[in-house]
Length: 110
Length: 114
Image (cartoon, rainbow over the protein chains, first blue to last red):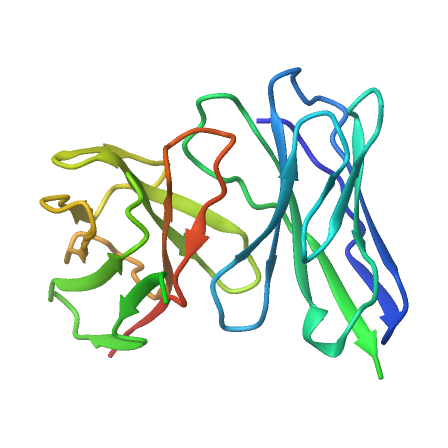
């Protein structure tokens, strides 16, 4: 499993953009980069995933570095409901399990 | 709405009892998973199933058992052999069991020992 490094915590203000970084320098060429988030007492929620190109969906954008050793999850306009723990998870080709590290606890200030 | 339903939300077990946690999905997904989460920790894989009538052990399968008789159902039994069963149990599913498919999670079952 590729190791990941994420800040323990980050703080932002409502309606501002948030950039959540993740380093995954040991990632393999075929590993997809997944992002999930988890609110207190709830199951994880899928946010976005990608391989090489930047990806956008209704929740967020994922910017993947050209060397794929890091990625950034971008929330374009944070709301209070975005306060959660965010997990960056490289997933090996054929892998069955998601390996959740400590993630980044995101706090949104009103 | 399509999704994953876990029941019950809270479950209490006496020492020496087996308990079964329910997980149902109506997403028509082939693959299903069971994870365990302890306070302040990440998720750990207990069992997974890629297809009906087939399942594989994850990292912490000891003391647990599963069955996959129907595509939409993947119940988990916590047996008396599981010495530390108090945890938050999460069920997930994905369209296929590969790295390009997101996993969708239920809201979990919190198991406590009386």
